[in-house]
Length: 164
Image: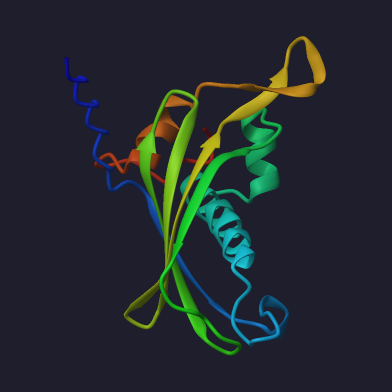
């Protein structure tokens, strides 16, 4: 008897995007003069914060307060390293929301050196507030509907108005 075929993964959406550039600094590099791979996860974390700032119209600290959050923890990540970035290189990181669930969302990152892709990354983040039974804990919360529309890139949505 054969196994049933696995369910096809939902295709990525092309949701809200944000792009930024950064110059590779000496401290980003290993002794070989190339970016130490874990630094890309730092770049991606920073890029997600900037994407959310662009989507909500407020910096991260104000966003956390505005939505009653403790944070937006990273629960899964991956990267594919295609070419090295070196000290002094100009990296452009484009971050795009590719999935929005009830309490989590996925961001795809593409770090480029000119037209060449250097690193592709992906993160799943959870919209998390305080746990009602554990003051030190976190609890996944529903992403507000208006923000979910902005993150999905729905026509006519985003960034959020100040009154949200």
